[in-house]
Image (cartoon, rainbow, N blue to C red):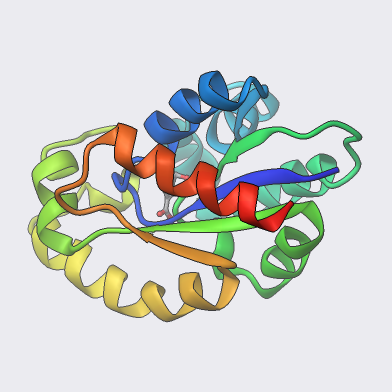
Length: 171
Ligand code: S3P
Protein backbone atom coordinates (compact mmCIF):
# COMPACT_ATOMS: atom_id res chain seq x y z
CA UNK A 1 0.00 0.00 0.00
CA UNK A 2 1.38 3.40 -0.88
CA UNK A 3 -0.73 6.21 0.52
CA UNK A 4 0.08 9.86 -0.05
CA UNK A 5 -0.26 11.76 3.23
CA UNK A 6 -0.52 15.53 3.54
CA UNK A 7 0.53 17.15 6.80
CA UNK A 8 0.95 20.77 7.86
CA UNK A 9 -0.54 23.61 9.83
CA UNK A 10 -4.26 24.48 9.77
CA UNK A 11 -5.07 26.39 6.60
CA UNK A 12 -2.02 25.26 4.60
CA UNK A 13 -4.35 23.63 2.03
CA UNK A 14 -4.19 19.93 2.93
CA UNK A 15 -7.85 19.21 2.21
CA UNK A 16 -8.10 21.32 -0.95
CA UNK A 17 -4.84 19.96 -2.36
CA UNK A 18 -5.87 16.45 -1.29
CA UNK A 19 -9.19 16.53 -3.15
CA UNK A 20 -7.59 17.92 -6.32
CA UNK A 21 -4.73 15.44 -6.12
CA UNK A 22 -7.19 12.60 -5.73
CA UNK A 23 -8.83 13.58 -9.06
CA UNK A 24 -5.44 13.98 -10.69
CA UNK A 25 -4.10 10.60 -9.57
CA UNK A 26 -7.50 8.85 -9.53
CA UNK A 27 -7.13 7.73 -5.95
CA UNK A 28 -9.72 7.96 -3.16
CA UNK A 29 -9.49 10.92 -0.78
CA UNK A 30 -9.66 10.56 3.01
CA UNK A 31 -9.55 13.29 5.64
CA UNK A 32 -8.66 12.37 9.23
CA UNK A 33 -10.68 15.33 10.63
CA UNK A 34 -13.80 14.05 8.83
CA UNK A 35 -13.15 10.46 9.93
CA UNK A 36 -12.74 11.68 13.54
CA UNK A 37 -16.01 13.63 13.34
CA UNK A 38 -17.81 10.54 12.04
CA UNK A 39 -16.35 8.41 14.82
CA UNK A 40 -17.12 10.99 17.55
CA UNK A 41 -20.58 11.77 16.15
CA UNK A 42 -20.01 15.51 16.51
CA UNK A 43 -17.86 18.30 15.19
CA UNK A 44 -14.29 18.88 16.33
CA UNK A 45 -15.32 22.15 17.94
CA UNK A 46 -18.10 20.40 19.91
CA UNK A 47 -15.70 17.65 20.93
CA UNK A 48 -13.11 20.13 22.23
CA UNK A 49 -15.85 21.93 24.18
CA UNK A 50 -17.65 18.87 25.56
CA UNK A 51 -14.98 16.16 25.87
CA UNK A 52 -11.68 18.06 25.81
CA UNK A 53 -8.76 18.11 23.41
CA UNK A 54 -7.19 14.89 24.72
CA UNK A 55 -10.30 12.89 23.76
CA UNK A 56 -10.00 14.26 20.23
CA UNK A 57 -6.28 13.37 20.14
CA UNK A 58 -7.06 9.77 21.19
CA UNK A 59 -9.64 9.51 18.43
CA UNK A 60 -7.11 10.89 15.93
CA UNK A 61 -4.63 8.14 16.84
CA UNK A 62 -7.33 5.45 16.53
CA UNK A 63 -8.35 6.76 13.11
CA UNK A 64 -4.72 6.86 11.95
CA UNK A 65 -4.17 3.29 13.18
CA UNK A 66 -7.19 2.11 11.23
CA UNK A 67 -5.69 3.63 8.07
CA UNK A 68 -2.50 1.63 8.46
CA UNK A 69 -4.56 -1.58 8.01
CA UNK A 70 -5.89 -0.57 4.57
CA UNK A 71 -4.81 -2.41 1.44
CA UNK A 72 -5.39 0.25 -1.22
CA UNK A 73 -3.62 3.54 -1.84
CA UNK A 74 -5.40 6.74 -0.83
CA UNK A 75 -4.71 10.45 -0.61
CA UNK A 76 -4.94 11.30 3.10
CA UNK A 77 -5.27 14.83 4.51
CA UNK A 78 -4.49 15.00 8.23
CA UNK A 79 -5.48 17.39 11.01
CA UNK A 80 -2.79 19.99 11.73
CA UNK A 81 -2.03 18.55 15.18
CA UNK A 82 -1.85 14.89 14.17
CA UNK A 83 1.95 14.64 13.74
CA UNK A 84 2.55 16.07 17.23
CA UNK A 85 2.26 12.76 19.03
CA UNK A 86 5.35 10.53 18.72
CA UNK A 87 3.16 7.48 18.23
CA UNK A 88 1.36 9.15 15.33
CA UNK A 89 4.65 10.03 13.61
CA UNK A 90 5.67 6.38 13.86
CA UNK A 91 2.37 5.21 12.41
CA UNK A 92 2.61 7.81 9.62
CA UNK A 93 5.86 6.22 8.43
CA UNK A 94 4.04 2.90 7.96
CA UNK A 95 1.00 4.44 6.32
CA UNK A 96 2.70 6.07 3.32
CA UNK A 97 4.78 8.92 1.91
CA UNK A 98 4.42 12.12 3.92
CA UNK A 99 4.31 15.57 2.27
CA UNK A 100 4.56 18.64 4.48
CA UNK A 101 2.71 21.60 2.96
CA UNK A 102 4.71 24.43 4.50
CA UNK A 103 3.19 27.92 4.74
CA UNK A 104 4.18 31.15 6.49
CA UNK A 105 2.09 32.50 9.40
CA UNK A 106 1.00 35.39 7.14
CA UNK A 107 -0.49 33.04 4.53
CA UNK A 108 -2.21 31.03 7.23
CA UNK A 109 -3.63 34.08 8.96
CA UNK A 110 -4.97 35.45 5.66
CA UNK A 111 -6.72 32.16 4.98
CA UNK A 112 -8.13 31.21 8.39
CA UNK A 113 -7.61 34.13 10.78
CA UNK A 114 -11.38 34.65 11.05
CA UNK A 115 -12.32 30.95 11.13
CA UNK A 116 -14.64 29.74 13.92
CA UNK A 117 -14.47 25.99 13.29
CA UNK A 118 -10.93 25.59 14.63
CA UNK A 119 -11.01 25.62 18.45
CA UNK A 120 -7.28 26.40 18.77
CA UNK A 121 -7.78 29.72 17.01
CA UNK A 122 -10.75 30.84 19.11
CA UNK A 123 -8.70 33.28 21.15
CA UNK A 124 -8.10 37.00 21.48
CA UNK A 125 -5.15 37.16 19.14
CA UNK A 126 -5.30 34.40 16.50
CA UNK A 127 -2.33 35.90 14.63
CA UNK A 128 -0.06 35.52 17.64
CA UNK A 129 -1.42 32.02 18.29
CA UNK A 130 -0.67 31.00 14.70
CA UNK A 131 2.89 32.38 14.93
CA UNK A 132 3.69 30.65 18.21
CA UNK A 133 2.08 27.30 17.33
CA UNK A 134 3.78 27.26 13.94
CA UNK A 135 7.17 27.98 15.49
CA UNK A 136 6.66 25.08 17.87
CA UNK A 137 5.32 22.71 15.23
CA UNK A 138 7.47 23.38 12.17
CA UNK A 139 10.40 21.20 13.41
CA UNK A 140 7.94 18.41 14.20
CA UNK A 141 6.38 18.55 10.74
CA UNK A 142 9.90 18.55 9.27
CA UNK A 143 10.75 15.45 11.24
CA UNK A 144 7.62 13.64 10.09
CA UNK A 145 7.97 14.61 6.41
CA UNK A 146 9.52 12.71 3.53
CA UNK A 147 9.11 15.79 1.32
CA UNK A 148 8.51 19.49 1.98
CA UNK A 149 6.40 21.57 -0.41
CA UNK A 150 6.46 25.34 0.10
CA UNK A 151 2.98 26.55 -0.75
CA UNK A 152 3.16 30.34 -0.37
CA UNK A 153 2.20 32.16 -3.54
CA UNK A 154 1.74 28.93 -5.52
CA UNK A 155 -1.53 27.97 -7.16
CA UNK A 156 -3.00 24.55 -6.52
CA UNK A 157 -2.11 23.21 -9.96
CA UNK A 158 1.57 23.88 -9.31
CA UNK A 159 1.47 22.26 -5.87
CA UNK A 160 -0.21 19.18 -7.33
CA UNK A 161 2.34 18.96 -10.16
CA UNK A 162 5.17 19.10 -7.61
CA UNK A 163 3.68 16.34 -5.47
CA UNK A 164 2.80 14.16 -8.47
CA UNK A 165 6.30 14.43 -9.93
CA UNK A 166 7.91 13.52 -6.59
CA UNK A 167 5.60 10.48 -6.42
CA UNK A 168 6.67 9.46 -9.96
CA UNK A 169 10.36 9.78 -9.10
CA UNK A 170 9.82 7.50 -6.16
CA UNK A 171 8.28 4.70 -8.26
C1 S3P B 1 -5.89 21.09 14.67
C2 S3P B 1 -6.16 21.19 13.32
C3 S3P B 1 -7.49 20.94 12.74
C4 S3P B 1 -8.27 19.97 13.61
C5 S3P B 1 -8.30 20.47 15.02
C6 S3P B 1 -6.92 20.64 15.64
C7 S3P B 1 -4.53 21.41 15.16
O1 S3P B 1 -7.37 20.40 11.42
O2 S3P B 1 -7.72 18.68 13.56
O3 S3P B 1 -9.02 21.68 15.05
O4 S3P B 1 -4.18 21.03 16.29
O5 S3P B 1 -3.76 22.03 14.39
P1 S3P B 1 -6.95 21.26 10.11
O6 S3P B 1 -5.46 21.31 10.08
O7 S3P B 1 -7.52 20.45 8.98
O8 S3P B 1 -7.57 22.59 10.26
